[in-house]
Amino acid sequence: MMNEYRSHPNPLLRRWRLAEGVQNCSLYYRVMRWGCRVAGAAFYHQRVYNRHHEPATGGVVYVSNHQSFFDPILVTNALSRPGNYMARDTLFRQPWFRRLIESLNAFPIQRNKADTGALKEAMRRLKNGRTIVIFPEGTRTRDGHIGPFLPGVAVLSQRAAEWTVPVLIDGAFEAWPRTQMLPRPGRIFVEYAPAIPREEARQYSPEEFVRRVRQTLIDMQTHLRARIGKPTLHYE
Image (cartoon, rainbow, N blue to C red):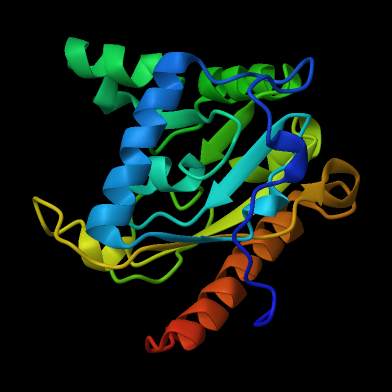
């Protein structure tokens, strides 16, 4: 893995119009994404690795660790296809903010309960060839470690998504921990793992698959932090 850090997009996605059946980016989405890319490079020296693992077609669920409020942007900022985001329902209470995030393909999910409505909406979008971003820890990390995963990721990966892509975020916790009101400058890294096809995901029980994806992210975190000279985070 240490020799496989690359930063080029999937060649099949280097087009203004994507393949038939794949959600395209609106001009509005492209402008917003461009602004986020500029800010990420300017303030956080953002580095993205292995974005060539982005699938060119089919429904994709991106499974990421959760370090900060930046994370939904970080997961999809370097991708070619637009993201769809499961966001906690409290973010939709302010009308102006609700209009903003809905314009960027977000939809609500209730925290701390089995929200079957949100799960069905995610599955509907996946079956329509869209991408869904989820943070199965359910909340932002308190210390940088990757916490236990909720089981919903297995449902999406094994029933609806054609592909599952683990995504590691590192550095966002230091830039904007949950105990801090405002962000500060820092260095942020994003790395994509190879896409897991649905047929492979179905070879595991839901519990085994969730453990496998979480362990993949832990291994990625260990390798990346060693590569950039940061202390290793230890897990039981």
